[in-house]
Amino acid sequence: MEREGMSTRMPVSVARARKLEAWTVQGDLLGSWVGPDSAAVLALIASFPVAEPMRCYSPAYAILAYSADDEYLFDLEFCYGCYWVGVRGPDDRQHLVPFDPESAPAKELLARFHLLEQSTRD
Image (tube, rainbow, N blue to C red):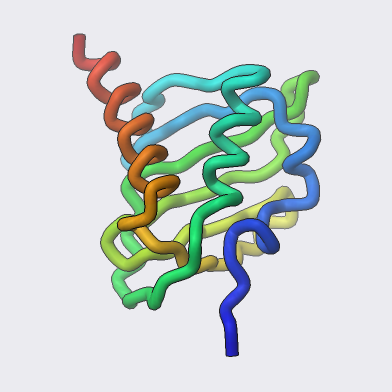
C-alpha cells in the first residue's frame, strides 16, 4: 500500500495562503514568507516525497499559514528526526504525513528554516 504524500494531504485552504510564519516549536518566531515567497514554500512542501517514518515525533519547526486578511488557515509541524509533518487545520485535527528528509525539497526547506533562524541571531 502506497502512503499518501504531502501533495495529497495539504490542507484545502492552501490556495488561500498568502503569509507563512516560521516558528520553532519552542515558540520563537523565525520570520515569515509573504505572497510569492509563501507560494514557493508551499509548493516546495507539496513536493516532499514519502519515506518510511519512525516514531519520535518531536517537531522542531512549524509554519502557520494565514490568508490575505490574516485569517488563520492551517499549520504544519516538521519533525526531521522521525520524518513526519503534522498537518492541522482550524478544526484542530492533526494528521501526520510521512516525508523523506533526505529529499531535495525537504533539505531546501530545512535550509530556509536555518537561514531564518540565523537571521534572528544576528
